[in-house]
Length: 372
Ligand SMILES: Cc1ncc(COP(=O)(O)O)c(C=O)c1O
Image: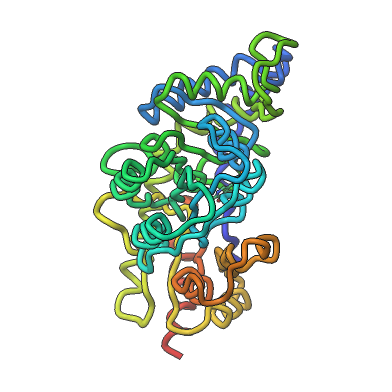
């Protein structure tokens, strides 16, 4: 059997007619960048998230970078983010000239550790630390209550990296709507994926939203009059049109992912493996279904791959040990939980269209390897 990590063709096929017609409308109207479809999608996603402003941008990385810029983060400011996340979280920080400061993660949730953040903030810092980026990794929210408390105490801006968690909820509030800004990615493989790159910024703050609208479009307030040092981070109308069609199905797809996760959870009970831990304050939309093996993940990933199952490691090397961040001066052992997670965690395929037969085959294969 061959089971991919994700099968977008199966997702698109039943809604193909709707999507084709939405794309045709964009072509007919020929407003390809920030056209009317962008405004419509922004409105619908703001409504979906229960937030005042949703601003469409080019991708999730730019959503983080623009949020930081709009909140006044400057070159050489320190920005705390977890070491165990996708590169883009810290890449966006470094990209605007600010300095990533890596925090360790909680060993159960894989999200940023409040103790680690507080340790950084209460220690001696060469840099002025101005912001924190909690990442809602794999589709479950970080402890935003704790993050907001620390942010108030140390006067930090909060940019939620909700790239993997669009639709997840922290105590009934949508991921990305709790901090000063929330950054969302619609990379095709995300739970809500575009047909290319796309992203969104969520905020309840009018002044921040106004700055974001200017910053994403070359700093233009009125055409050819540039108020701010902006960038070209606009959202394509075709992407917005595709996303607007797919948004209607997101809750159903997320529910199906939760059912797949539940099936895995039930059937992997009793074997020597750590299943996903979901804190009481968050829902989990299972962008990834992540297990922790008692041994190095390499062995089990190779075993599953050999059986045709596309298991992966997100992420095999924490950011503080990446070559590109060597200049920050971290070394092995500095952030042990991030390093442990990188060595022991691995994913199982998760998407709404997986069949019972495929799931049983995956479960059987995991058991074979774990039980030896
Ligand atoms: C946690 C996290 N942050 C940021 C990003 C960046 O999003 P994009 O690929 O849309 O730039 C991603 C996407 O892969 C992500 O998973």
